[in-house]
Length: 118
View (cartoon, rainbow, N blue to C red):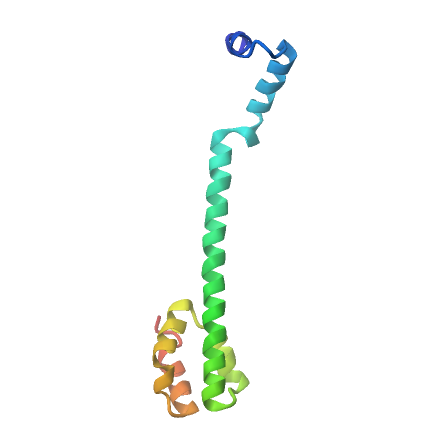
């Protein structure tokens, strides 16, 4: 540690020995380490990606419910609840076929056939 202090004194001649010691103490704080900072950034990125996927799923669900409500005037609460529980992949599959439905029975049949198949 003394060698590092001596090196720092020569590298930063404008700083006092006390300032250099304070810098070294800060650097040893685990939150200041590169490993900690990289882990923190990785966690932020993962959280961002998960948040984006959740937002996409919520938006897709909302759009599907609006389209179905417009097509059939009203969606009963049980069917709405089933749609609320669909995964993103299931919502995308429903979005592809919902315009082919001619009745609410078509929708309920699709939900029965596809609710747990993904």
